Image 1 (spheres, one colour):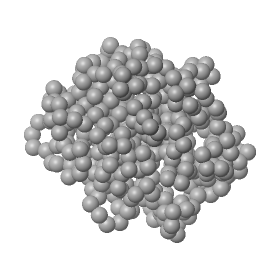
Image 2: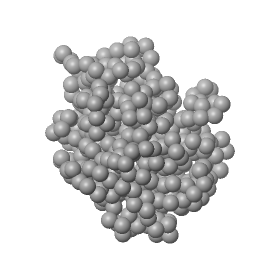
Image 3: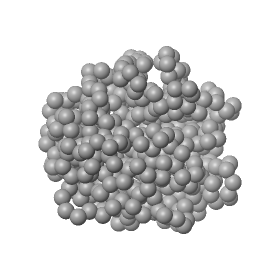
Length: 428
C-alpha cells in the first residue's frame, strides 16, 4: 500500500486511517445503494447481491459511522475504534487452525517506524497490541502458517519477514525468505510460501523450506515465463535463486536469473485459507497495480500445476484473470488486495488515489468465478460490491474466514475525524 503514501504524502501526514470489518448476516442496510436496475452477480454462496452501479460520492472524512456504501440488504455496525490500535492498520488474518481457530483477528500497521501488530479477540471484543518493535517499519503483509504461527512482513526496501507466536508476540526474523519490499504472502497445501516484491519491476516468488514447517532455511524461486502467450502470460517455471543473494537483495537475485517482472505486484491469494473450490488450492492470484492503463492494471491467475501436471508446483501457467478491456470497465483502477470466498469469487480492493480529485470513493470489486471450463479463463464478470464515503481513504487488507461468511477489510488514510474503525457489515 506504500504507493499512496508516496504519491499522497501530505494526505498521509495530516490524516489518520480507518479499519473496517465486513461480515455477512441478516441485518438490513442503513446505507443507500446505487439506484436503478442492477444485474445479479450470479455468484454462489452467502455473498449474493445486486452490484453498485457507481462509486460513492465521497467527502473528506466521509461517514464516520457508516464508512461504506453497500448493496441493498447490507448493513454495517462499528465494533471497535482507534485508539485501541495504532494508525495505518493494513493486512489482516485470523488464526486459521488450532483449537480456537477463527477467534483472533491480527493486523499489521504500516507506520514508518516502531511498527506494530495488533489483535482483536472476536469473542471478548478486546483489542490489544500483540507485538511492537522500534526497528520494524512499514509492516504490511501478514499470513497464518500451517503450523500455527504468524508471519508479518515489511513493505520497504530491504524489508524482512518475521515469524511470531500468536499468543505472546515473540518474534524471530526469517531472512532466508528474502530481503525485499514485501506485501502479500500465502502458503499452499505443501507448505510453500508465495510472495511478491512490490517494486518496478516486481517479481513473484516461491519459498520452499528445507524442513517443512521451519522457515529458518530454504530455497527461493522466482517465476519466469518460458513460452509466452501474451503480455508476460503463458507457460512458466520457478527458477532457483542464489540463497545468499536472496538474503541480501531478493530482487537482484530474481533479475540475475531473468525472472519475469511485473509493475508493482501487491497481494497474492490462494484457496488454502478459505477452502475455495476454484481450482482447488492450485490457482494463485496476484494483483498487479501498475499505472492506470491496460498493461499492468490487472489480476493474474497462476495455475500452479501447469504445464507438466501433478502437485509439485514446479511449473506454472500464467493468464489474465481480470483486466480492463477483457472483463472489467475502465473505472476499475489499480487493484491492491485480494480475498477469495468459498465459491471462488475474488474480492478486490482498489487504490487509485484519485478520489480527492474525482469525488468518487475507492471501491471493492468482485471477480465472479467462471461457471466451468478451463482453469485458464478470465472471470465471468467483475462487479462493484462496496465504495468508501471518505475521499482520503482506501480499502485494504480484505480477508475471508473459513466459513465464507465474514470478510475483513481496512480503510487507510482517512480524513475528517481520522479514527480507525472496525465495522461488521451483514447481508442476506
